[in-house]
Image (cartoon, rainbow, N blue to C red; front, side):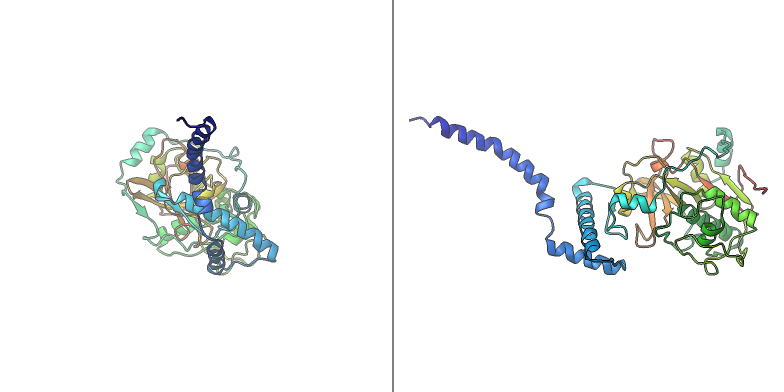
Length: 361
């Protein structure tokens, strides 16, 4: 006796549906069987305490909770072992910001570099300089040339933090004294830049030289907003000018970083960088530089070369305020554009430089 035709159709339909159900279950495995609502709420409350976060009203807190939940899902999905990433993301200090909010608060539009007069280094010049023995790795923190990690807050003053970090570095190398300097003076007093808006690190170097020096952050503390330029500021640390490192050349950049901390800029737009926790960042990123950073070393981890970068998001972002960015990539501009516009300050008796932009006015 045969099966009824409608029963056969039903059985075949079930077999056809099962693979679709499996795909659906796999897709929703994390979202539906993920974390309980109670666990997510507890994590959010715990995160607020750790990062000293409070909100104006119930509505804002609820909105931030939904963003936190979305970021937590992204973090859990990214950090799954089978994804085999070289870095992990986590609930850092920016975990209650959407990526759009993060970019609007912390990043700048693409910097206009057309006004820069740049003299390229020839291959033979670079080869001659590279004959000097370079260390396979260096961390300027270990040599007392890197100040504490700071937080730019809601002021888009990354350019000032990068300028100050590099000046602190070269001053410590030359004099043996690590003096923490004032980003706020640059925000208030450097009229060639744009205060809490997109700015240029090399213009900050020009200001410091023209001004005859820069004050300490103890005397001129950071406010994360533009204020009136103080007339009683001190000229505690001086520089002689600035210079561009080899453009689009990670070999040349390594040479200069072996001598002193170097400023640069990267495309920091992605949620992976926003929520970065530790490891060597090797994610795809653009090359539209929208955030200034300071390169304070380089090395190799797990067979992967990296730049050691000091950021200005505070100690609760990244690996204590730092990120390891993949070094020696196929793109000439480097990972996230790190090798395109590296610049550093000059100071007497400091490391030899192959090119100088002395400021005469």
